[in-house]
Length: 342
Image (tube, rainbow, N blue to C red; front, side):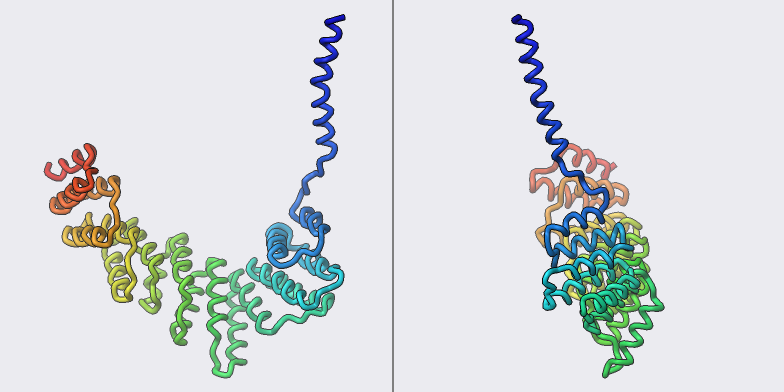
């Protein structure tokens, strides 16, 4: 009897959690299988607007663009009651998402559906900018040039606005059309516009990824101000390719333009100069110290090793003195230093 009771208790203690787990499985709502299904489930919670609308529009555009217009214009049309003060802004969000995705046909479809179903007519300037964004983002240079031609024809001074040129530059960079972006930057310079400060670092970052950073820099021909981040990228490229002449050209342009070299830039040109120019390497080492930049033990050991290759005894001893002053003259550093005298 005791054994039967024991068995019953054990069965009960194991069975209860099992029944509880099964209940959880039965009650759980299955996850939507697709982004579109997730959106349809989420929009039942109420009117989706602003940043939340932007978020969902971006997700659906990335996965199921063919459903984009019907889903989101339909959602705005079902808002009860429709807020005619808000609708134009929501339509603009949808146009922006489609434009940055490089889908000009969806931009046009959104504008048409918004006019027919919502009574929203997009502002002509905003519509023009969205078209520029869409065609530039898909790399359609022919359509971009046509839109810019239309803008020139309508402008009182016969020129393209800075905002339009900046939109095209950003779109071309999304599409990997770096030469097109460069041409628009040159056009900005020709028209006397100030180059947007964030455009140049992004251009050089894209050029570095494409392996054309030197060509990009050369094609600009000193026409634009090269900011600190771009100078750093250029000097790191010069170090990676052992192009000391290019590094010196970039450094001189930075000096002429009043662009300070940050620690990464100075490290790059120091590591390069130690291979080929003893005098310059000592100058850059002193500049790093004067600027208050700290040289780590690993960098110092690397520099001493390169000094051994180039027989740059003076720099090697200066680095050793620097390490001793910080009490970081480790045995590996000392061992590397001995190779300089070998």
